[in-house]
Amino acid sequence: MFTDSDVRLIRRLYLWPKLGGYFLLAIFPTLAAWVVLIMIDDIALESRGTYDAGIFALLPIVVVYLVISMVLLVRSRSLAGSDEWAAVERAALTPHVDASTPGELNAALGLASAGRVAQAVGEGRGDRNLEGIGETAQVAAGALGLFGIWHLMHTLHEAARRIAEGYRLPMPRLAPRRLAVFLAPVIALVIVFVPRFFASASAMSEAQQAAAETIDAVAAAFEDGGCGYVSADDPQEGYQSYGYRIFGYTLDIGDPETSSLCVSVNEDGVVETLDYHTDFDLSLTPEENLARAERDFASLSGMVADLDVPLAADGLLAAEPAFPEEFVEQFSAGSYYDDLIVRFDAAGGLSGTVSYETDPEEEYDEYSSSYVYLTFEAS
Image 1 (cartoon, helix red, strand yellow):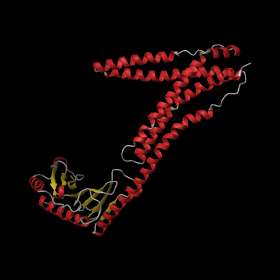
Image 2 (cartoon, one colour):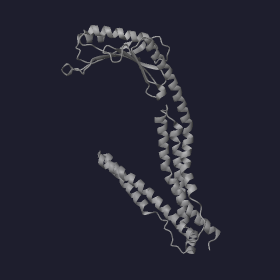
Image 3 (spheres, helix red, strand yellow):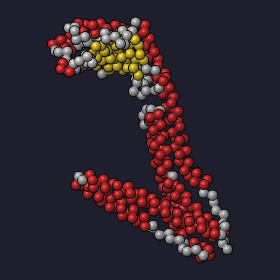
Image 4 (cartoon, one colour):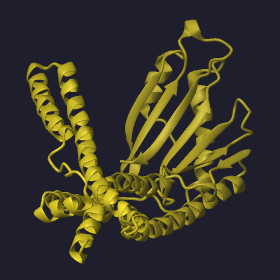
């Protein structure tokens, strides 16, 4: 009943619209896969810098898939409107398939135009509500347009399917083709990102090892120096892109007279900041508190001053933990119940900050505390 040429036409109209729909819809899981891969790179592996290959890999895939989808749609419509297909329909005694532009597409074009006008008017008037309505209309137009394209492709495919099933004509299998169309771009993206993942994982491991060496050296210096308590982050328990901290306390951590030194290192094990801390006893004079703090700070500084570890600035560990004259004068002349912050330039081109923190006298109670921080870091 059907010639070989007729069967080829039926197979094409059976296959092309479906493939066009697959190529169009496959863009969305491809976008999702790309976002997941970017998140793995940025969040899970905390990769440094921008991976241009991964960022720009998506664009050619989307463009190619859109072009293929549109080509298949145009060719399917052309085929359905041809005299050859009309002859197949007459031979199969089926009604002529409507290959005209679906109403959804026309409605989408109108809605998109109205949305752009509303958005432009809203921007001109400064009316954010109208601007939002315009943006929403354009999004809705896009969704309606996609539905219109899918509906047209579905209609063309169904016309060929009914003829094929009615006359028991063998048709190409759709499942393997659908799987290939949806998986191919995802696999391509994975291939692009795999070298980046391996490089990031290797860099993370090296950074953890370097940080662990610095942390171990500082913690050992605190312990050998006679600290009452030592606390340190462990890079092997989890990579931290913001760095790690090691604390050394002159006395037990719960002792009210204890002073501490926090050595902050970055993710590569480079010492970046020294933070000295102690609580002040308000029953003592300011001079007595400052003298005790400087003695404790000097003791802690001596434990780490000669360490051979990477530093953000030369001489950082050896910075003399003494309060600047400006702070001493203002603190001695002021009140225990007033906060005070002084920034100063330390020797060796370092930046220093001394911060005294407390509570107002009228709010001071048994839960209040008064303490001072002395910080050194690279300028």
